Image (cartoon, rainbow, N blue to C red; front, side, top):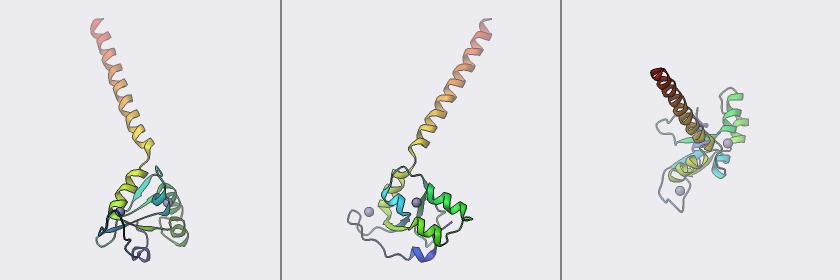
Length: 125
Ligand SMILES: [Zn+2]
Ligand SMILES: [Zn+2]
């Protein structure tokens, strides 16, 4: 899954915060949004890292996992510097995924506590 090659030849952006960095590609939504969800392409040699948001991914899947005119128009990939790319990806990782993990951990703790309680009752009887 890669944004088409034509897009990867986008001019290297000159980042004022991180001059001289490599560049990467993100969809237009990730570039400006936050907590949109991040889907990262498999890294290929010679290709810049690429990520797009969950909405773009849903369209991408609906279009048969292909980047065509419609998906590329929706994603409108933009080149960002590699340092900014890391920041953008971190900013867009879904918060609820983190809280879901916390929820799973708490559920596991409750189950273990429940089992221990049952075991204690069993041992005391
Ligand atoms: Zn997007
Ligand atoms: Zn930068």
